[in-house]
Image (tube, rainbow, N blue to C red):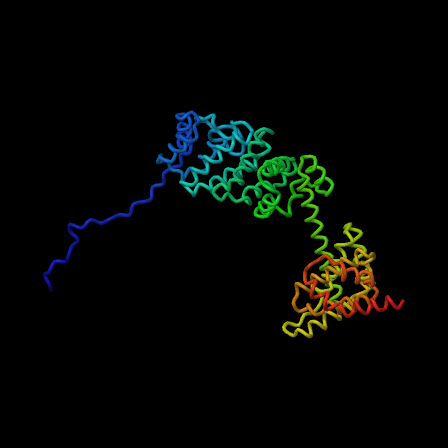
Length: 411
């Protein structure tokens, strides 16, 4: 038997894994430190921003707390506007006057802070969301301050603050029912339009996914076109009413176009299709000119285009006009509407290369069906105002026009 001693681990230290030590949150101390910086500089936002940038405070943990101090002067009790224990500073957004010159410096101040610490944009979103979801807890003056701040923040493109975050917080049934959301948004729109165009506002609403949901700002019982128009016109926002009406109008025309195209594609009865046009026009109060254009678009939508076979496409389009010309005749009830149809066909053939040579044949087909009168065609030929492809189309229509003129002389 061997007498060798077994090896030992003498002199070796066995390492033990240290447990992660969780440092407890202490937002109160952080808030007090921020408040003290404000107080030290008597609310001078330039000096306050420099001190905050130079500090080693843990903004990554207490970003929400920081913005509570910015907006209200200190920490608030959850779900209320009541302050929690601790120091407060009087130089907060909701403590200043409800004017643009008073609030703009705070927007620029926050912009400066976030540029140094970009991650804070998420905390700003969190706090703004909570404030806006608590609108009913603020008085009218404070709600106006929040509206002005929101407007200026979005106008200044505050570090990419997403509009959808702001407006999504407002589409809350209980807030909408109380009317606070409508009042806040109305004030925001008015403030925004002071320095921005309607197109800018519409672009903002599109990014916020609110363009088609404006009526949802109203309590359920007031979601009518009449209530919408009355409210915003009274508030001096008639341009928004006009835009909204046009948007609704465009939707109705699109629905008519889709419905007609489906019926035509299915070879529905002509009387049924005509009845669809009449009923939709009456229900939606659609102008005759737009109905004429929409019926033409529906006819072309329903053509079963055959890809690269150009001649087949031409034949299909012309057959469509000959088959459904009487439908156009139902809506072209005056010389003015006939001229609108001429212009519509002209532009369509100009913009669709495969139909360029088809213009005179379409006009002739509609003349044969008594949709386009002789006077309409001659007036277009002699005085037509739309320049799109006019010279080409006039040249191609010249033989038919000569025939009309000769027939006119004989009579």
